[in-house]
Length: 107
Image 1 (cartoon, rainbow, N blue to C red):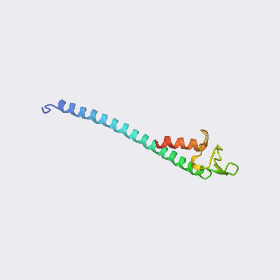
Image 2 (tube, rainbow, N blue to C red):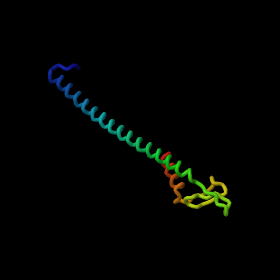
Image 3 (cartoon, rainbow, N blue to C red):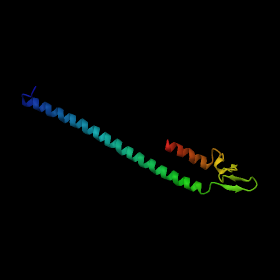
Image 4 (cartoon, one colour):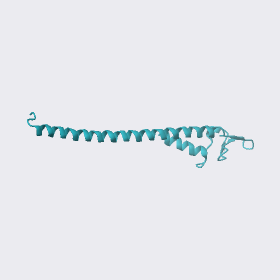
């Protein structure tokens, strides 16, 4: 069915304008969502960078040798073990807290 009168054409034009307006709203919403996502990604990237820097700082000072115990000792929580890889850090130790944050960030 083809439009027959000027009012038929005007109806089609008005309908198209409404459709375009609705699509522009959707596009604006999607752009805002994209901007929010980009901001979130930037913040997370900054957080990961800070956590990695924190890890490097912690790693520089992760053990002391305790002659009396013959073991490596964490300078933060004072836990020790003969093998520094097996030190069971306390829950409040900065190394434990950092490791938990990294698990959260890495998912």
